[in-house]
Each structure stands twice: as C-alpha cells, then as structure tokens.
Length: 343
Image 1 (spheres, helix red, strand yellow):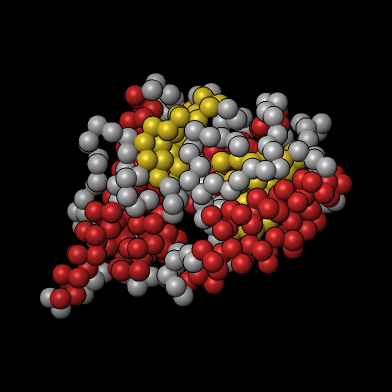
Image 2 (cartoon, one colour):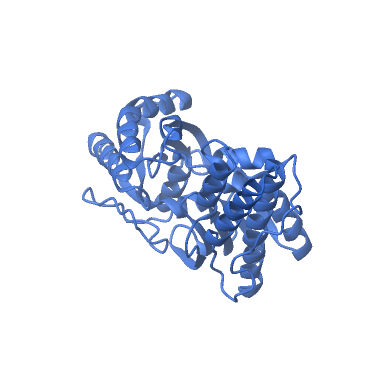
C-alpha cells in the first residue's frame, strides 16, 4: 500500500511513551521510552511519575521514530492517539501532544481506544484481520474477550475481569515470591524450572457459564499457600509456585477464549496485550486452538506490550474506512468503553 497515508501513533496510557509510524499495514517505526525503572521501587506504576515521564520523553521519542523511518514531520498525513482507557494524567499528556502535532502540521487527528489498538496491531505482522474474529486481550489493567466484526467500526464486549486483571495478578504474585516488578516476565522465567502441576491452585469462574474472568481469588490462594509454608518452617520452591500459578491463569484464559469461539461460531482467535508475551500462554493457546480447529494469531512480544505502532495501525484503519477525524476538543477518557473504537 505505497499510496496509503502515513500515520503517526502516540501511546501514553500507562508507563510507556510509544510512538509508531505506519503506512497501511506496513510498520516503518516503533520507538518506546519506558519509565518502568522509575516505578520498580514502588512495586507498581505511580500515575504522577508516569505523567512526568511522558512529558519528558514525548519530543525525543517522536524524533527518534521519524529518524528510524527516515521521515520528517512534513511527510506525516495523520496523527492517531490513545484517548482511553488508561491513567488519566498519562493520557492527557499524549492527547495534548497529539492535538499540538495535528494542529501544527495541519493534518487530521484520530483519538482511538487502547484496547481496540491491541487488536489492530496484529495486522502489522499477519495482515488484515479475519472478519469476524475473537480477541482475547490480557494486560496489567485488562482481561477482556471481544467479538470483532470490524476493528475500525464494531467491537463487542463478551466478557471481562470482575476484579484483578491477569497482568495485575502476575505483579502481585511476583511480589509475594520476592520477584522484581513487573512480575510477568520474571514469573514466566522462573516457571520454566518448575512444574505447572505441582500445586492445585483454583481456577476462578472456570465453569460459571459466563465469559468473565476473576484472578483475585487465585492471587490470594497463592499468598496463603506461601504464608502457610513459611509459617511451618518449610521452604518455598519459587519455580513450582510460579509455574502452578501461571498454569492456572493461562488455563482459564484459553478455556474461556475457546468457549467464545464455539459460542459465536468464530474460527479465528487473536491474543493481544502485554500478557500475550507469556510463553506458556502462547504455547497452550496454540495447542488448544490446533485441537479445536481454530486459527491462532499472536503478535510478536514487542507488539504485545503497549506501543505506538498499535495506535498508528488502528489510526490507519480508521483513515482507510473513511471515518470522520476527531475534533481537537476530544477529551482523555480513563474509562473509555471498548465499544467506543474512536472518539
């Protein structure tokens, strides 16, 4: 699509300042400045710290993306930005920057939904999305099942977390096990030396007839198990605990995702979001999809975590669909519903 417009995407929903540039479904640049190290000593993301980090990183990260793509500001045809959901202050930095760039360059602005962008990004690796598909989005703030007839126009919520999201549970269990923040990668690594069958941790809402998720009880069960072992003077084999916890999470995620595929007679499953980088989730999803005759799509790990490429990808879809650009008065909406793809 050499004649497709060049779209610059800005992502600041949490702790990563992501800038991406795409032409159609071709990725030209993807630069990320993370403030994760600044949050690590607090054991979680501090909104005020994240907002300040976005402010400081915005200009150099945009300039780095342009340099990576071999472009200048005058080449950009449209700006896309995450308008929600996310941390209010962090979103405000990105939305304000996007408005400034759009106004200064005289190009259209597209405010997009962070979750829908996690779906759209897969097109940069695997081409156009099947219509419809089921999307399982799993991250620190979200665990959602979606029916996606058309990512640029129509996204339907089928289920979501009723308490802790999967990524949040990974962070909290990592803290219990003395592993660093963020917990996901460290639990994944520790679990490779353990057995997922070592401890029978509970599977929340596994057979409740809904497509919702619950990981708070699992998180508490792990903490209580560790506390009981330590109180009795027994050792805690971290790899076994990590593997058993991880197995409980991915078992629920993949079962519910395939339940959604069967219920809606959809044969394509997409997994996105930061937890989609988890090696066990990717392996078990592939195994169960193969057995069920479902085609699985998972972006490479670098496109699963928050990034500007996913925002640019959705912005490109909106341009191609002829969607009316956003107003320069669009707000940052920390609780933007998934059914609102663009604002």
